[in-house]
Each structure stands twice: as C-alpha cells, then as structure tokens.
Image (cartoon, rainbow, N blue to C red; front, side, top):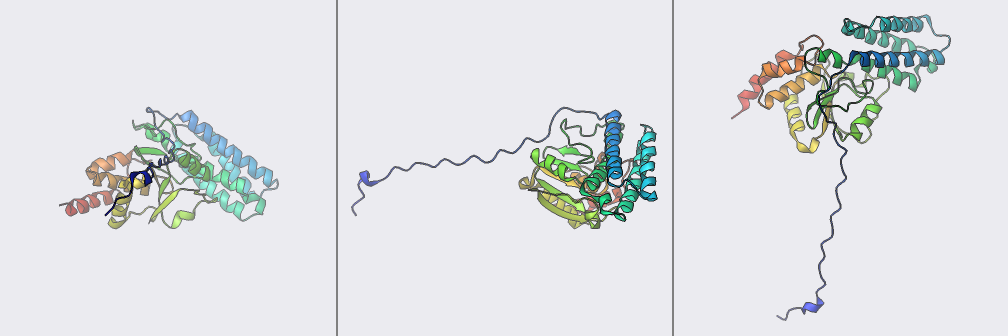
Length: 297
C-alpha cells in the first residue's frame, strides 16, 4: 500500500494546557498566643454595636428588650480573666433572650444588621481561644492568620489542610474561601438553622453529617467522616458544629484514633478544646477505638 507523502502531513503541535487556577494560600505561621485584652476588646465592641443598633432602630424599646440590653452592659462591665467562662455563658443566655424579645416586636427590631450584630456577639461569647491558652496549648497555634472571633468562633488548625471551629457567619465563609478553604463539613443536626441570620455559603463545597447537639455520632457516621476527611479531593476542609467544641471534638478525636492514636491520647487532645477539661461524649471515643481496632486486619 502506497504511503502518504511526507509533505502532506501537517506538523502536530501540542496545545499548551491551561494552568489550573491558583488556590489562595492556607493560613500558616509561627505559634501565637491570644491575649485576654484582645478578647475583651472585641466582645465589648460587638456588644456596643448591637446595643447602638437596637436603640437606634427601636427608640421606644419594650421593658423586656431594655432589661436584656441593661444586663449585657452589666455583664460586659463584670467581664474579667478570672470569670470569663461564666460571664460568656451568661452573655450567650442573655443574647438569646434579647433575640426572642426583639423577634416578638416590630420589624425594625430584627432587621438584617441587628441580626448580624447579635450573631457576631454570640460568636465572640462562644470562643474559648484564650481559655485554651491557659492550658499550655495556644489556640490557633499553627495559624498567625485567623478570622475575627465574631466571624468564626474557636477556629484552629488540626493539621495542614484540616481546620475546625464553630459555625461561621457569611463573612466567615468569605474569609475561609479567601484563604483557600473551600470544603466544609457541617455536623449540626436539628440545630442547623439556629442562627438568627442564616449563613451564605457562596461557592463552598458542603458536606453534612448531622449529629444532635450534646449527643455522640454513630460508628457509621464516624467512618463516613474519616473517609471524607482523608480524601485529598476534599482538602482543605473546615469542620464545624455550632460552637466547634463538642461534636467537632468527638469527630476529630475519632479521626485521630483512625490515624493510629489511642483513645486516651485523642481525648487528651480534645480536652484542650473544652471549657471544663472533659467532653461529655468522650466515652464514645473509647467505644469507637474498640470498634475500629476490631475491624482492622
């Protein structure tokens, strides 16, 4: 068979492949310790902003709203390094009462700016970064760059590519995306809609493993979590529940067990993230260790 003359062959030029979009750099840096003065300053700022917005929107506030605002002012004045946990718990409770009172009143009292301000104040009251530093382990100890407390409470790095914290605000999501963290695992169950101003998740790739608040997950849920977290396609990833402590702590502890840590080692790591030095769900971590080891060849 006669071949095709070489002159009839068009030269083949490889088409250049487009460069993949550059992912923003993840937060990283040297260890850093939070300061109580910074916590107090941000909490004061958030509460003051909320107070001003409510009083401007509702010049003639109800007696109930006025009482809650007065209580918040008193709690802010009492806030010290020696009582931070108790005062923040009281602030969260008062903020919830204020939310209910405002919701029952005129629309001006629950405008978007007021709802956003209340959520940011609650996030600061949920954060325990400073208390963690008292245990000898600096919060955010891998991250110099971290979101404001009002946007993501209890933000921390577990390892490069794996981050944890409380439920973010819409601005918190913007911060995560700007720093290359574009996958999210939501561990909230029926409380997923607890925020007064729902979060806008933008282009975040979302995964849900719903666990009831103050409850432990199932073994099947933990296995799903481990598989999801260990898949490179899902990194960098941000894991959260409501506060970023209980359910997040249990899942991260079980993930550590699947990585080879003992249950006690994993629990000790998570005690750092708890206000009271222990987790209600820690017995589940021990049971998961037995379950996990029994399934290994």
